[in-house]
Image (cartoon, rainbow, N blue to C red; front, side, top):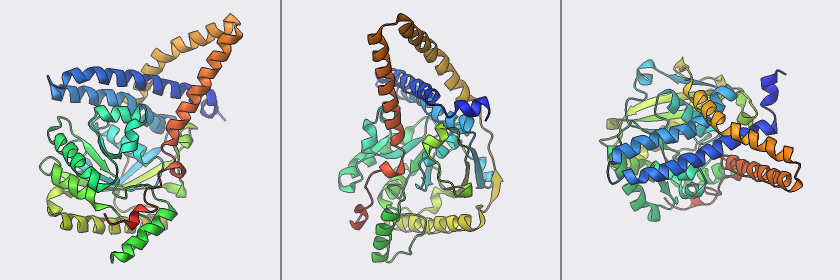
Length: 376
């Protein structure tokens, strides 16, 4: 085991990475709070600044995937589709099977220059998660309670507000509504059978309200829908903790572009289109399980140095005073100071672990276990 590989497994190193992320995130959130004064004066300038501030935070997580774990991401698509990446507003539909599916999406956003301006239809609970939810708030992320009767007006208003967004955005939708588990899948397929819909083997039944509303509200702004089907070579099930420990994964993403004109404008037609799309996604996943590849040309976009440079800048600024302070504490010989410092370290470790826990499948919400039994 080389020195770098050894360091990747050490708790102290993980704690230092977490410290940089948390403290830089708090600095970024405070700066975002200050930019609110720009909103009534120059809304577009506010948005551009917050895109760059968000990039400075999200790119630290992308750095872990690209440079720390050296995970490789391969696209299965055509060059004409890749040539459009980062040059148009789009809706992204991504399967929700893995703990780091969002991170694989972010790394593609970064490589095509839309990481800071990426959007998502997120569950309301995430708004209260420090750093993540707070950053999203300033980015005008649309939050929902996943109860359509309560969400309808909020979602429509949030989507319409994005119509004049000044930078190209990729708007992510997890149409399944929650991460795939066997329990949720069983309940979901019971609902599919009751509605006369074909069963899905690798996905949950898509919930159509969010998709049809997004397409209706963003028509005229969004140029296309990108369908992304993600899987990992070797039947791996990666985790954010695995990434932190430097484990390398190989992600494959099948990307298909559908011009918005091809999607029916009426709600019923758009919902039927989405159900057909998920039947095709299921066939793609079955093909991957059997052959280990998706159809299409394999394209591997090069990683960019900016995520690494951004992290190194934050680490230089934040770790130098921390290490000086730690040396001073232990040099003082004061038991009270040392115990207080170790208590702070323990609290920081707990906080970082809680943030990581947000991504863990077994700690995910129970949404979908029973909710599928209710009509959308």
